[in-house]
Amino acid sequence: MAIVIPVFTLNVNERPHVRMAKWTATSSSLPSSSPSRSGSGSASIWPGYSFNVHTFMMIHLNIGLTDDAREQAIGLLTQYLADTQVLANKTQGFHWNVRSTDFAELHGAFEAQYDALFASIDKTAERIRMLGAYAPASLSLYAERTQLETAHDGVSDQDMLKWLVGDHELLIKWLRDAIKELQALGDEGNADYFIGRLRFHEKTAWLLRSSVG
Ligand SMILES: [Fe+2]
Image (cartoon, rainbow, N blue to C red; front, top):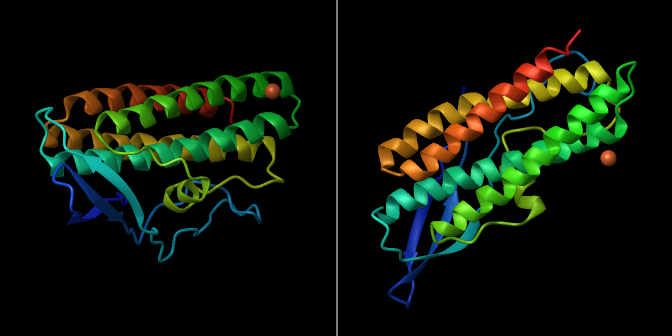
């Protein structure tokens, strides 16, 4: 699986303890996790994908992490923020629109899942702030940055389940690598946070997978 690695370009501005950090990140072979609109079960949605530049302020902190380590951690948290925003939005849309003989069960399960995802979004954004950066709140940025395909209409109940399983599995694999990267940076707090998120996605993937016919 391709891992999105943010690449930071730093410019020190006139204030000694504040600097502008810009990141750009590219990935050429992000995996597909969703059924295609045509229903063929495969999609090539990421060819030549590249992110727009996002700019944020990063203040100096004295918390035992180098600025470079914090920037890498902020990049990983920002990636996860974008991905969970898209996954929460998609799951909520499925909660609204699912049609199934198991409607009540799926409607309720999707609600519990998007509630948990939206709660985690707040935690992730606050962890970005704890590292001294602004948490991006732009819907267009999330859509540009995410590894997941954004939701669309006209999806059957079984394709909803398969699509969500694929998204959670993608995040499980991404989090495994991100955890190792954070541990290598010495950022045990965010590594521990991501371990908790890994467990959530593992359990949610299992619940969803168990309902696939
Ligand atoms: Fe509802």
